[in-house]
Length: 286
Image 1 (cartoon, helix red, strand yellow):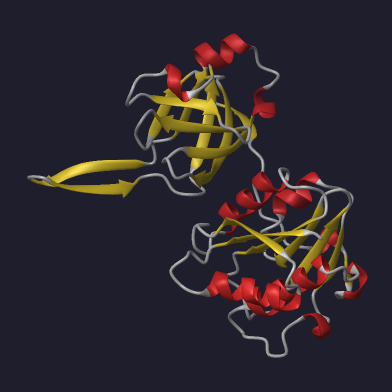
Image 2 (image 1 turned 135 degrees about the vertical axis):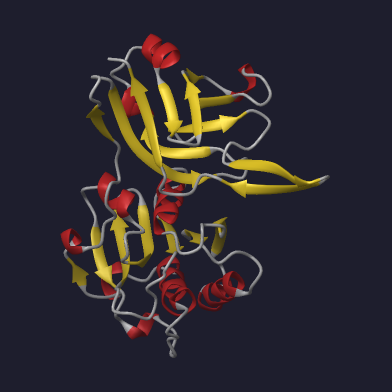
């Protein structure tokens, strides 16, 4: 019996997630459903793409991943299911949400979810998570054939986000700059980029520890890449590779992505100064 994961931007205030689970269990009462996160930044496809890709490697082969970050719901954007051998299935909108999946797996098969036999009888224009994606996942978990779910698609025609990977640039003073962008702000206020360890693996350890300047330009700056949070002092801004292998900027025992300002006696205003998609750079003097 396959496991089903849920990744959405629905939050937990409303009953949307619960309704999706209700549909799944109505079709397959034995299904096991795991909430990966429902706190994707609302309608932010890039942030959703990060969550889906970052987490999927920690699940057993054959896991069914539903991802719903879908500002184009009800339009002509396609609903799709992806099958990757020895990995599992990915179900959601064709809007770039699976860009990192496409970028990392050459062997895959994609079908459009256009077979009404595996959808609810009434399809809302605004809630395909409940009416299309959840039923499809439930039928798959019950053993339904992937080939029956819909028409085969050419994966090269599917939507992909731009600028998925960081790129090296040479500044006018000959400094080398690896330019990426922010993918996620986690619960601790750490600023996580799309720069991974392998993008810097050709550089010597001394260069990374001593000379590298890691920044969100105009907002945050750290010098050198540390091994972990605990070796720095409280309040210090540091850079390190997090548990997912992504380069991040953190502020020890504080939140790097936020600034708190005293505005009136004991009244403080906390504002996020870094957003998803902001530039994130590594600069080296050579």
